Amino acid sequence: MKIYLARELQEANKNNAEDNRTLLLKNGVLMVNIIGSPGSGKTALLEQTLKALNNKYRIGVIEGDLYTAEDAKRLEQRAYQVLQINTEGSCHLEANYIGHLLNQNNSSLLSADIIFIENIGNLVCPAEFDLGEDVRVSVLSVTEGNDKPRKYPLAFKVSDATLITKTDLLPYCDFNLDLTLRDMQKINDSSEVIPISIKTGEGLKNWCQWLEKQLDIKKKRHVCS
Ligand SMILES: Nc1nc2c(ncn2[C@@H]2O[C@H](COP(=O)(O)OP(=O)(O)OP(=O)(O)O)[C@@H](O)[C@H]2O)c(=O)[nH]1
Ligand SMILES: [Mg+2]
Image (cartoon, rainbow, N blue to C red):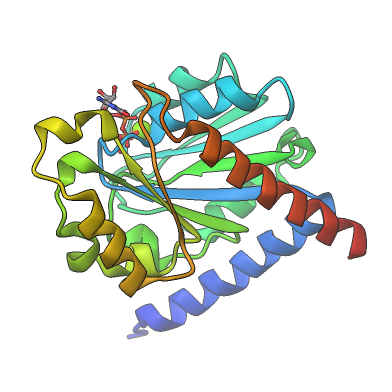
């Protein structure tokens, strides 16, 4: 009997991720992989991000969900293109799923400036799978509690930015923002940490500026490639 070792399969995922990265660089497209627990505010963040940036950029979205297309429907009014992946139970996206969508003949994703991937709501497994993104962003809401970066460090370790969402709820939660900022410094001192609230708009400008900086870096790399 042939036994497939997870580490070998993950090696295949790494190769697929590199293929995606090459394709994205050739086309000058920035891909952002967003990971976080169910309900942490990923789609709400994308709704506001599209509102803020869709007049300036062509923005594509790949929505990852187990079964529904509810999040895709929330975003399709504003995005340049929204594609939905239903994993039918699997807890994370893999690079070959993304590669398939990028290579589809009728996909205009590669004409976008930015592609956001909303990964499956899960703070554990998506952190282990490189999708070929340029930047990975983890989302942690204040309602989840201070201990999450310490208990689930990988997601934060492999992220280029961490958004601490729902800061409007800080007065009602037992969440110490300074403590999490200190923990983040220990786990990954090169990750940008941006507190943000979709309700009050706090931090949205910082987040959009960070994104535009990443886009600028990508466009320059594309020109030099
Ligand atoms: N008060 C407050 N509520 C928020 C904020 N951001 C999101 N929410 C609420 O949190 C709930 C979950 O938000 P979603 O954006 O659907 O969360 P998600 O991470 O996309 O969830 P999944 O796709 O199921 O993993 C919704 O009821 C949002 O309105 C925020 O900044 N402040
Ligand atoms: Mg969502």
